[in-house]
Length: 210
Image (spheres, rainbow, N blue to C red):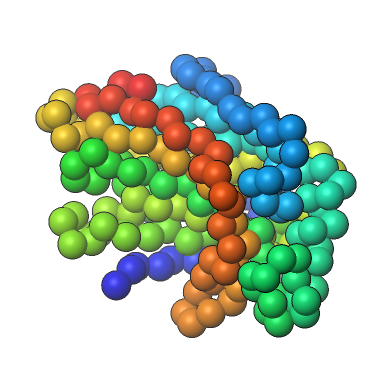
């Protein structure tokens, strides 16, 4: 059982957070020479992380679509005979998944209103997928893009409530992966996922560490 919360957002409401001046303490990214990871997966992207204030950590991904990405995503959006064998006869939408994968128990929590993006007509889903051990800690944040994508830079940022105590099991990694999702019940479910994980970024065991 997962807990899902959908939050419709607008670019105007996100402006104060998207352009915040918090110091980015660490950054890296991915660069692909082809579309083998998925025709919808941006070939280039950047990851950054920071401690914006005491008790919080954020992870951020910025990426750019090329013409093939945009054409493929539009094809998926239209439904019918979608690219490849997956998602056929269903309208599918670009999905960006940013998850805290713990070494032990969940120590980073994403609550309502803690994910921001400038992706068009975005629906946000925060989930507790590891509820068996830490019920109520949302370790997964996800954006499903229902609007039309254009050329330009897009961003997803998740603010995490930092509950790390320094215990050996409090570390983990932030993972970012792209997918396409079709509407299901009660939410959107991945019908195809990138063959690669775009970002695996380890984080430390102590609150405020990167």
